[in-house]
Image (cartoon, rainbow, N blue to C red):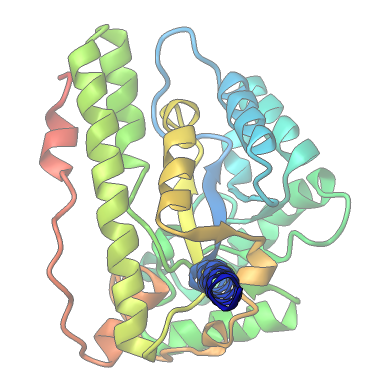
Length: 313
């Protein structure tokens, strides 16, 4: 009888230990999940389109994927100039705004490095009527700097930031970027040539590059801050988006990211910081801090610029 009781006690202890480790594993999984907001630039058009494909069709397909995957609201940053003479672009933007929020990307994608702050500010204001028409609320007061250029002089940087603050804008920073726009026009060329082998290479190179730069962004954050942060991912709405987006979302899940809104991602205190220097073609928010703090970049593969440019020529 004593042996039976001992066996039962041992089994009970084993079961309790198992439950403990299962709970611990589950909690660690939750803790390990990093918050990430997806954003889309250059609406309603980025890159070339394959023959017979429209901007509206592309937007519709991407929106269907986002809805099916229950992705939190994805800000689309618009350049209203692209609507001029484009009924297709206008329809694409109308579809987007009916489901997802929109933000300001300046009227014609102006480069702050090549222009004075006053001209840049006029471009922001010129884009606002379209945003007011598209958005049901004033949640469009987010600015995404074209080219991620925040000013090649500290005077420019400070002037525009003061202007944005006065007009109630928040800056839609970027911490993760693999320049996904590079694949859009290349994909259109390959579809036009019906080159299945090259399209397969575009898919694999895209996902490999995405994986590499997701890891790099995480490493950068740890080097700069000493800990993980919430992330904001830059993507573009183009021809390749609707075909590769499901796999890109799978990759984010595999990497342990939890998708959240832009507001939630930027509630992280790191986004309150400002390098407050003039930088030329500095890149992401993390790239800027790497330069300012003079931190050496971790080893990483380069993006396949030349290969993408050459494919399906």
